[in-house]
Length: 131
Image (cartoon, rainbow, N blue to C red; front, side):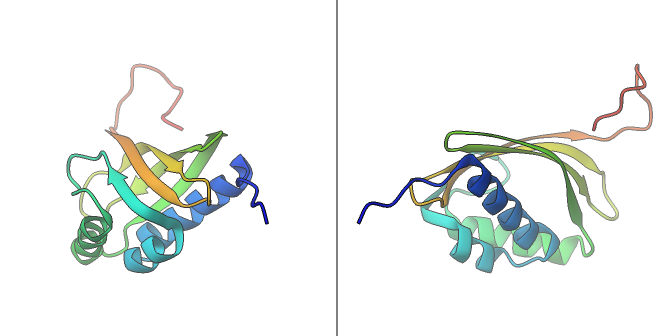
C-alpha cells in the first residue's frame, strides 16, 4: 500500500491546528504528540531543540502569560512548507506580528520550525499596518 504525501492544504490545516493547540489552548504536550514527527528541529534561539524543550517552553509561557493568544492573518504553503502570518497577544507584555515557518515530513508531521517576530508599535511611517 502506497501512501500519498499530504497536500499543502492538509499541511496548512495541521500547522494551524498545532499552533492553536499549543498557543491558544496551552496544550503543547498534546500538540507535539498529535502533530510533530519523530524529530522536532527548533530554530528560535529562545527555545531549546527537540520536543521536550518545546513543551517546557510553552508550559512556562502559559503560566507566565495567562490569556496569551494568536490569530492567523494569512497562510502560504508550498510543497512541505507552511508559513503562518500571525498576530500574537501577550498580556502584560508586547504584542507581535510573527511569521512562523513549519516543515513537514512525508507523513504530514511537523519536523522543523523557524520564526521571526516584530513588536507591534504605536507609530508607523506609513498607514499600511502590519497585517
